[in-house]
Amino acid sequence: MLEIRFHGRGGQGTVVASVLMANAFFYAKYCVQSFPLFGVERRGAPVEAYLRIDKKDIFIRTNVYTPDHLVVMDRTLLDSIDVTKGLKKNGIILINSNEPVESELFSNFKTAYVDATGIAIKNKLGTRTHPILNTAMLGGLTKVLNLCSMNDVKRAIKKEVPEFVDNNIKAAMEASHQVKFVNS
Amino acid sequence: MKRVLEGSHAAAEAVRLARVKVISAFPITPQTHIVEKLSEFCSNGSMDAKFIKVESEHSALAAVIGSQSTGVRSFTATSSQGLALMHELLHWTSGARLPVVMVEVNRALAPGWNIWTDQTDSLSQRDTGWIQLYCETGQEVLDTTLMAYKLAEAVFLPVMVVLDAFFLSHTYEPVDVPEQESADKFLPDFEPAFSLDIRNAYTLNQLATPDVYMEMRYDMHLAMEDAKNRMADIENEFSKIFGRKYLPVEPFRCDDAETVFVTSGTITSTCRQLVNDLRKKGERVGLLKIKMFRPFPVKEVCNCLKNIKQVAVIDRNFSFGAGGIFAQEVRAALYGFINPAPCVMGFVCGLGGRDVTIETLTTIYKKAKNREAGQMESVWIDLKK
Image (cartoon, rainbow over all chains, first blue to last red; front, top):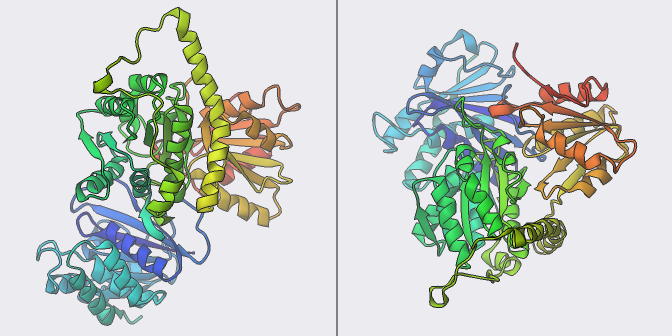
């Protein structure tokens, strides 16, 4: 089983990102389970969502404490919370950034980055001040995990995203081409 | 066809498939997604139903009592304080013999103000004459809600379909949503035995003197008992069409077990994982999931537990001055029927949404296996010092 933890801020589409990714893995014939950590959500406050995937049935129904991989939708979170808490050794951290992010926290992990904010703005997703990043992050995540295809992601977007479907698919595709691992 | 669906939406899909005609509800976290989805279905034409907005949960159930009295299939949903506010009308619904179905998302009662899962809200309504069915997965929520209408309409008692806040209500997983055609085959239109009609006016639920009241209550008791047999028939019919079956209680790896967990709701799933892990290490352990809480399946519980040495009942609820509620019911079921009775230990955990992890359940298993808990007390697990 793989467990992925999504970190973001309320309003960025973090919960929807985990749901979209669950759909994509479902199309790739995985068993999936996705759910948010519920606090008292406010726009801008840190939020978490979880995704479990497995080739076998998933029984466990608890929060995720030791994720295999991380998705960080907002790099300013690094200043306020330890996003790597419980992350397994050699786990991948995908971070929304237009440049490699240096942090001592990341020394035991593989880090990748993609400019999801830039891609979202370019594709007119959300507004310039509040871009909706989730589909771009998904494209990046799909590329770095290499467990399901971009076709699965496209199907997931078509099913779950109510509007601007083409722009969202374009954002995911662009991110999958642009995502880079930080040399370590 | 299977698709990734939120637990709340699985409930809403079942209500759509049941061709419910009247929905009335008041939003309360964590139930809100159910009625949001239903109002969407009503506005976009997926459902031909009237959605009645009201100012409180008391009014929501009152509206549904009204619509169901006219012979129309009706639905409501709530949680916690909302259910508590409905209390008076919960008795009214069952006493009036109205086959209403409600989905209840377990949430802790305030204060302290808490939106997370805890079964005390639904369990404290156990004497209101509602059938109560607890669910473990999104699929079970959908299937149980469909079956609930058939059961309610067979015995003329209301049914509460219960699920955990967030761990089920807000969890997305693959759920098979049946086609309308097969749902119709399973659940045809409701044919009421009685219904209010303005063209043929009469009054329901008049004064019941000591001369008749007791027989009315006895009839409700018989209907509740009958619900056990009816549910078995309904499950058989459901399984013929959809290939899925749940049973009032489900024993999991109980053969040759010495220690058995008794669970309900989503804790069951995590416990299945632990039982599988412990079995690999040679431990003789199993679990008994209780789905039907009212009527309580006494015979089935006794059958499953008769040869077990230690029983660890997990309660995500508490009755002050008495103990965990499932533990009380299990003890009462076994008393006098099984001799010698197994050692029944009650464990309280997960209140107010505290996570019940593999570690929590492992602690309980060790205490139960070594009989480190008394039979007269509830042992509180994961308490902070």
